[in-house]
Length: 219
Image (cartoon, one colour):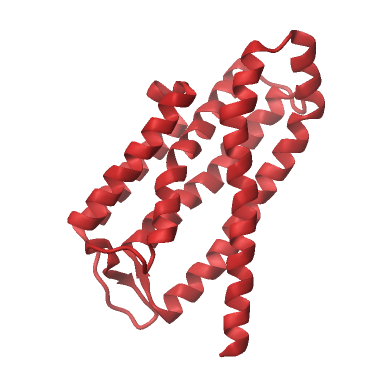
């Protein structure tokens, strides 16, 4: 038992450490670098694209990778010990979409933007930008889901699945999952909308967290 607790603590520590790296750089890209590039001199922007962006993207994508891997380990352990509740289901789903957006949309298109691959740069920038904004949108409710697991109250505290079987899916959780799937579909096929500005995406992320929390607790 002691060795399990030690391993659990180690993976929790690693998960948070990698997550800080990943989400910190996500906010840097969305709140700092993108806004700077709008105002930078052409020479300064070119230099940053060549020297700064590749380094930041390396830490960004591998931070996402190891956050995801350690999260899977923790999720398996939580399921075996306690079972999975509605909060962690929401957090894990949003976190998984965020990870997939990094590796399947943002990084492939950013390679074109920074000149590592040939392609249509304006189109690639738009695709990467929308996926990055969507990840920023997901970040607040995702964190709420992670922290709410076995600490939150309401209907979402009900066990959804466990190693022993059983559990039930609430109406609120179903609604949250539908919203999440719709927002991810928009990240692939849709438009930026109110997420185009920093203020807009921050407000949307907080509003999404509030809506998801209300649905999880009340339905």
